[in-house]
Amino acid sequence: MGPLSRKEEIVFKPFPGKDPFKPVKPSKKRTGQLIMHSTIMFGREFCYAIEAAFVTPVLLTVGLPKSLYSFVWLISPILGFLLQPVVGSVSDRCTSRWGKRRPFILILGLLMLLGMALYLNGDAVISVLVVDRGTWKTWAIIITMLGVVLFDFAADFIDGPIKAYLFDVCTHQDKQKGLHYHALLTGLGGALGYLTGAIDWEATILGKYLGSEFHVMFFFGALVFLLCLVVHLCSIPEAPLVDTSGETKVLVKNSQPDQYGAIESVKNNSECSEMRISPKEEKLTTKADSQVTALVSV
Image (cartoon, rainbow, N blue to C red; front, side, top):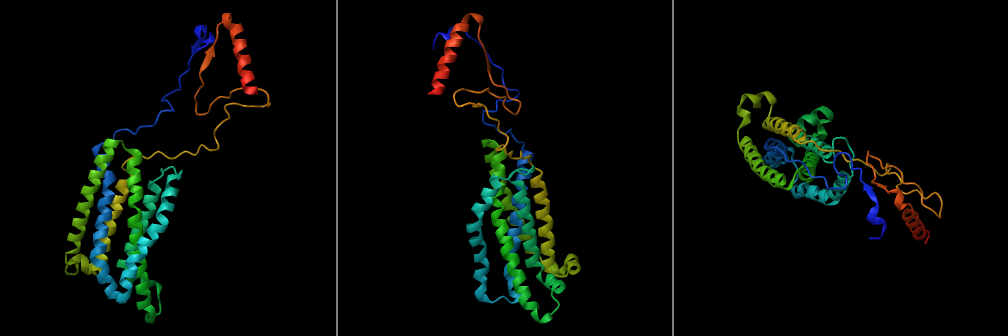
């Protein structure tokens, strides 16, 4: 260091609160929060089990040609391949006050419910919307296919925001625990979904009241998934992404091409360090300033 560093007096004014230049480390989460976060995997797999057990009988009921069976299952992966990177990029830039992930989880969850309602209640939808009975079969096939594709699309897509939500708000140890709970509740949800589908609901009071076994399964699937979705969204607070692109102040103002301007105050209540120099070193200061000015001019 030069002679200026021997007698100068440096006074640092620390940033209020936490150091903004250090990486933000998430706080440790309670076990209950991680379990609540994992409940959506239970609901998602419960609905997946219902789809796996009942889609084929539903498609047979509406009279879908066998040549279109594979086509129904092919559409959703193609849409996922094309759109999932786009949805992920939009989610990374989302500035909603709910956070980056939860708005997309909510939208995809509602799309899952809509798709399940269409393929399990297609006959009821057709009877309300279509007047011409001669076209009921055609419309039933269209509505059922649309419901299956929409459900698969949303159920496949929702896994990405769920995992990103967990990784955004948890420490490394909590991420591991959260993934373990995800796997556990995924298995439980699938097992309970298949067990529910194995019951002959048409012989029960609920089946007679709702009209068919398909309507009963929609009732249970929608109830379980909606409850799990609400619990998941309320599990762990998510800090919103703040867009600071238009809020940054100029730190060095060069009002004239041959000299420095004044350093303005930094936003967000932070203060720059202040350097005080004793009167005895005034000559040294003047000399140092002239050297800095010469370097800047170059």
